[in-house]
Image 1 (cartoon, rainbow, N blue to C red):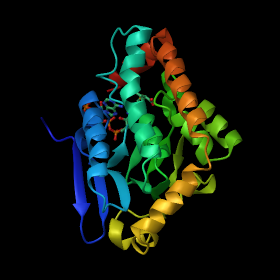
Image 2 (cartoon, rainbow, N blue to C red):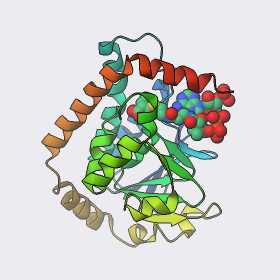
Image 3 (cartoon, rainbow, N blue to C red):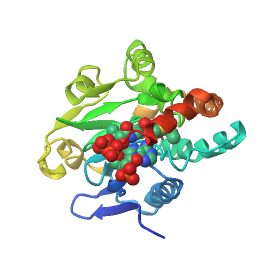
Length: 254
Ligand SMILES: CC[C@@H](C(=O)O)C(=O)SCCNC(=O)CCNC(=O)[C@H](O)C(C)(C)COP(=O)(O)OP(=O)(O)OC[C@H]1O[C@@H](n2cnc3c(N)ncnc32)[C@H](O)[C@@H]1OP(=O)(O)O
């Protein structure tokens, strides 16, 4: 099987880096990638030394969302639901992981790529890149539970407005609404940017404690139910004519 997700463990830093490795498709997530992401996250349990997990993209993009070519076609609503579920499960596992997680957003992100970032505890963005919950332009809503998570990351009103507006924003705008906690430049190497240093300076026991405290801020059962509802709701929009037309327009754009 092709390696579409690379997992690297740094013994020097006790950090696991997960790289989405499909640069020619801007790291759009196919079902095979989603399956590999599941495995990568599950395997973290076998490495008790990892104190931080970083997710980044290979090449020019962080992640262009779900693979529209694969996830499209004449799906029924129950089929669309079954297609969306596995990535929701990845987002849930990431959200509730026992150690801190960082989305190192080294390039653009769209749609589900933003949902993936929302499932991480922290987001660092690259100056010059742009980012959008663009599902609204595709005739759908967020479909992996990431819209629910967005409401937990920024002010409710800002989340609501961004999802409706479905626009693409610059890195500094993400800082302004507190979606991102730091910005780095194109040439910055992760370890030398300074953004990761606070985590490296702490013991794993401390980081686990703070992560537990962070998770206690949420009603996890309710959060899970809201994510489930979001996926179901999106599955109805997925089969709409508006969505079919928007996807056809994307693939006919050239
Ligand atoms: C399924 C879940 C749902 C959710 O819950 O949110 C989603 O995620 S829906 C998908 C949302 N994402 C998008 O709508 C992004 C669509 N892509 C783009 O707008 C642009 O490609 C880009 C991401 C802004 C990059 O533009 P650019 O740098 O100009 O590159 P290209 O457009 O030429 O793309 C290169 C290459 O990659 C393919 N590609 C890009 N995104 C996707 C995608 N989401 N699914 C499938 N394929 C994608 C694109 O088709 C090009 O391929 P080739 O034509 O074969 O070179």
